[in-house]
Image (cartoon, one colour):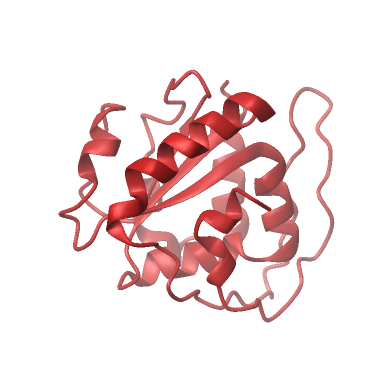
Length: 174
C-alpha cells in the first residue's frame, strides 16, 4: 500500500467491514466495493501530512502512477476538517483501500486553513474553495473530474456508496 502510505497509514481502524467485495465491470476497471448503509464510518485523524511535503509527494505520486498505469487521486484537505476526516475514514475501510490502491495512487495534500498548497490544484485549473477537494488525474496529468472536483466538500452528507460511485464515474473517464 505504498500510495496510501503517503498519508492514510496513520488512520484509525474502521469499525465495521464492507458488505461485499469489489465487483468487476465488464467494460472497464473494477467497480468499487458495495458498502452496506448500516456500516458506520469512523472519521480518521491526522490524515494530511506536513504542508511542506505536498509538492514532493504529488510528484512522487505521478512517477508511481506512470510506472503502475494507475491514475492519481489528489485529496486536498486539512486535519481540522470534519468532511475530510470522514472521507479519509471511508478510504480506510479495508475493501475501499484495496479498490483505491488498485486504481489510484492516493496522495493527501494538506492545505492548511485553505491557504497552503493551493497552487497544486491551480496547475489543473481548479480553485479550491472548500475541502475536501478531490482531483482524479491521469499519469499524463489530464484532469478527469474538472466538473466535480469540489463535489465532496460536503462528504458527511453523502452516503459512503455515493462517494465511491462518484470516484468510479470519474475513474472511468480516462
